[in-house]
Amino acid sequence: MILAGVDGDRAWRLQDYLARGGYSALKKIISEKIPPEAIIAELKTAVLRGRGGAGFPTGLKWSFMPRSFPGDKYLACNSDEGEPGTFKDRDILRYNPHSVIEGMTIAAYAMGCARGYNYIHGEIFEIYQRFEEALEEARAANLLGADILGSGFSFDLFAHHGYGAYICGEETALLESIEGKKGQPRFKPPFPASYGLYGKPTTINNTETFASVPFIINMGGEAFLNLGKPNNGGMKLFSVSGHVNRPGNYEIPLGTPFSELLEMAGGMRGGRKLKAVIPGGSSSPVLPADVMMSCTMDYDSISKAGSMLGSGAVIVMDETTCMVKALERLSYFYFEESCGQCTPCREGTGWLYRVVHRIENGLGRADDLDLLNSVTGNIMGRTICALGDAASMPVQSFIKHFGGEFQYHIENKKCLVSPEVQYEGSQIYVSPSC
Amino acid sequence: MLSQESLQQIDREVAKYPADQKQSAVMAALRIAQVEKGWLPQELIAFIADYLEMPAIAAYEVASFYNMYDLEPVGKHKITVCTNLPCALSGGVHAADYVKQKLGIDFNETTADGKFTLKEGECMGACGDAPVLLVNNHHMCSWMTKEKIDQLLADLESK
Ligand SMILES: Cc1cc2nc3c(=O)[nH]c(=O)nc-3n(C[C@H](O)[C@H](O)[C@H](O)COP(=O)(O)O)c2cc1C
Ligand code: SF4
Ligand code: FES
Image (tube, rainbow over all chains, first blue to last red):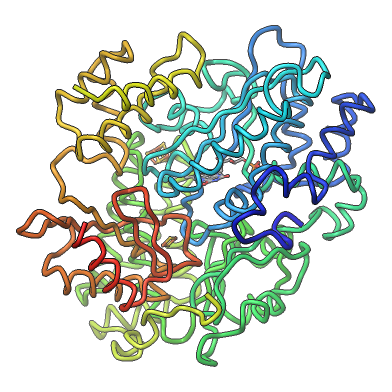
């Protein structure tokens, strides 16, 4: 859908987008004067769930915006993709930026926003530049700006470039960052729908969420829903990384068995055995191979298995992986990226990293697993934003499913998987198709 | 303190935001300043703050909060290699080790000739392209095998 048949150097251009039917959803809304309520109703029928991580129903979120609010209202797109394992929004912006622009324009029309920003992750400057060019194309064609296509409706959209802070993916940190401040999440409530950018009502959605909107308008909510499965409407992009033969993005109907996705990604590298999968980005709980092999890729199935579909970032680990080392790297990440505002997160992420680090380095103590569990218990639910939970869930799930491996480390002061095997398994690997 | 061209670029950024929200352009302004000067000394940050009519301390807070701003001088070419887990599973750490070995420096060090600085990076949202690295914050290099690293370093060396 979003990425079907779009790659190469030209697909992102306005001309190419128009040639494949682009902006027809926007034109339809304008020419048929479809009322905002009908658009939101269509999204609800489609059961489009937010693609940024939380899976919140988009139609419902849009209905929270006070349409009759007299002052400015804002729209923000979250392209601050930095959750380890996630690399889908970059490809959407690289190959199909106009689908995001069209989706945001429809959203602005539905919610009565006059201005929007797309917040783009710092490390993808080249993609930010391309998006700016796409915006220029849309403005020049009067698909953006004042009095769009003579409809009387005006919306302008700009790109805001991040500069290296994972936490700005959290929606209120993102707003702070657009305001030119440190990216520190705000207390909620008030929620952005009442107090958002510059204190005005604001709606924030993920890049893929916006990019899905034109398809829903064109095909109808019912048809979109039916692409997926009940309560999990549509297609979804999955970023598959790790020990597979062909890492990359795969756009498949929600509800597709994990085994099929693994097959699409070329199967396990070197024919090795699957050990574990992190199914929804680094913040989602890890699942052991057998549990994962019985899952389908949708919000409900993954959550029933004890994890989260999150951003759709599927990190595949084979038998050469040391789970302690894997967790050590993730824990370092959360420690490094905590914004430092809340004590349980600032101190707790440091504790988690140091304890996992010492276990990995043969200095673990007998009660370290209890200690880790108690530290996560002190973080969970006691912080301003969800980064605290995001740092804790990997720790809890790694211990839950691979506790034996941690115990082995503590008792034997070395990895269960031999260093030579780990070394081989983490070699530079580039798929021949790249 | 900054070239006319940089100032024009900053003005274009300012125009993206409501007239009374100039501060919103501070991230872009710092980036533009850093591209021109190589890094961000305090006076430069203060200049940007002044230009955007915001307190210097607020601009400094921003510059120190976001990882890609350099508050210390760096080599002519800053290389940042992602070693986060998804990349590490496809050789991110090996690629970083290879760069270290070739340049004879560790993370957070600069070569004696001032040409290269090496940094360890967090997820760049490009894990499918592992190993990935960034050159001078803005240019991403994908699928970095040893041969491609050799090539890249040779190209940069001659610049
Ligand atoms: C620490 C943290 C990082 C996040 N990073 C992202 C991100 O990179 N992209 C994203 O869309 N949402 C991210 N989110 C979720 C956003 O806060 C928000 O829920 C989302 O952008 C809403 O869009 P959606 O409803 O379309 O998914 C993050 C949340 C947290 C707590
Ligand atoms: S939970 Fe962590 S990242 Fe989130 S606001 Fe608190 S300190 Fe900052
Ligand atoms: S983990 Fe390296 S780019 Fe995502």
